[in-house]
Image (cartoon, rainbow, N blue to C red; front, side, top):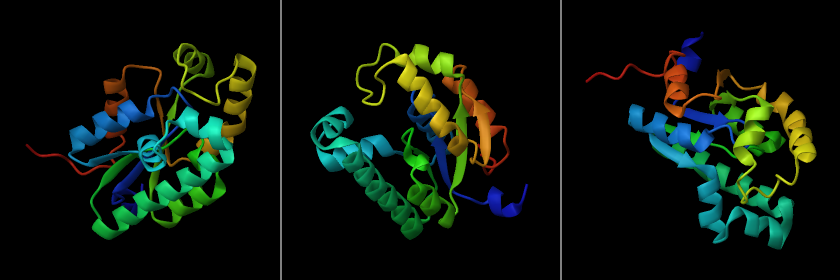
Length: 181
């Protein structure tokens, strides 16, 4: 482990839909006293629409444009303030080459919340606001398409457990400063 990786203060959680990115990011940021940024929330606030509404009205290309724009803003805010933050990315954020490049260029550390596809499917089956979840076959195909991108993350933690246990795994990586009480 290099000191360079240890000093990064822009940490992004990536993973497929249902892997727990938003929940884990919120819990992790709270434990560390860092800022929590939910990219999906930033997208919906900027657009004034829900993610399914963006997809329905304007399509995935427009969603990805807004996503890249908001990610660039998050990165710029970090660069300006240097205030450490935990960012929960969308499931397809780093599958867009320009987004992955932006994060790498700005020293972001990527943690993949890895969860077996069958568990992801179980978690997402009852959720109706996921525009890219149409059926099991397309879900598995999209997972397989994104898997090589997730594997580019700096770290991988298993997320098919309770969110607090996922946070414990991330803290055990030793990449954060020790919190003293």
